[in-house]
Length: 272
Image (cartoon, rainbow, N blue to C red; front, side, top):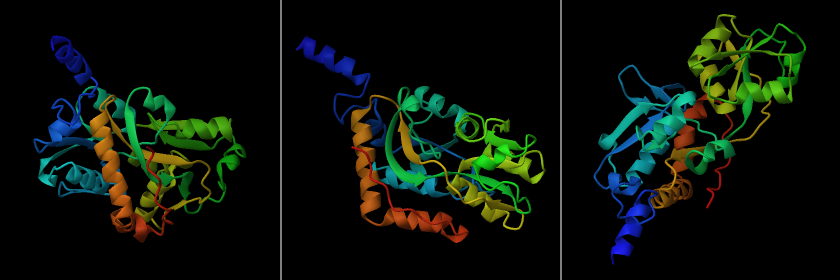
């Protein structure tokens, strides 16, 4: 008996004693609260509006998942998740979930767990409307003075430099909106990240910015959570599958990025 209790206590550290584990996500959600990290400055994905409300694909997916866990929107605490601090937000316990155009990678899975994908995107380039020099990642090699902007904590720009344009000059800023400002101000010639993010910024500045339109990678967005919480991970996976099968997934995507002209992909298959 004592051995069994001790064993279960040890398993509680990794969320393996069943859905009644109050130290895990399911236990916390059962009390009606959840902390979620999202982007505050990505149009169409995650934006904090002037009135203090939040809008975007990641926001709506987070609301849906929270609802399936039994948490009303009033029980959600939103925190800003920037690319450089997403893992830390989870491992420190500051948030329970991160939905912030969070691409699933093997390196990140060494630190945290993912559920998904819930969206598939492709890396592309955002440039000034009147700049015809950049037609794809390879064209960044054509001029040694071209500057490519990306966000600290992402791998987008380094991927371009390694795979397509080894001579391009890299410029980094903390936020996606900083890169957009840099391109508009001619402090950078292009910005690279996922096409759906770029489409949102282009839609905000349709006369000044455009997406090149030649995706050159596959990005799978997942929901990040702390490692070892098997009951929580299973509940979230069930929620995402239900969101997709019920048609709510497509409504969320169309509502948030449909007006930008972005071509909506087919819904993904959530990994088991």
